[in-house]
Picture: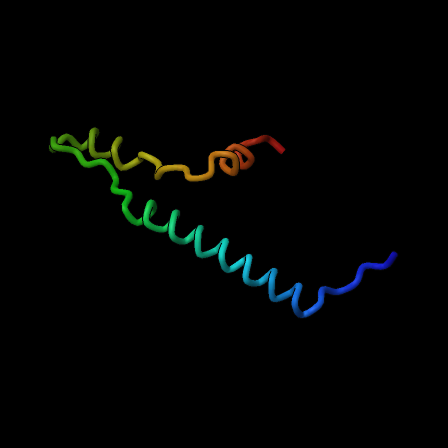
Length: 72
């Protein structure tokens, strides 16, 4: 049986579902990233400041990060 393109109603339902998913993603992810602040050093020690500047941002999707690190 050959695949058939979606009807207009099916396509509209798909678009609405995708927009709802995007809306949920934006509401949960963007504030978390926007609120992230790098740690700061109280001391004037350049070594401490350098170490703190190398801290990574929080990983929201560890499974993606894990996939990127796998050897190919």
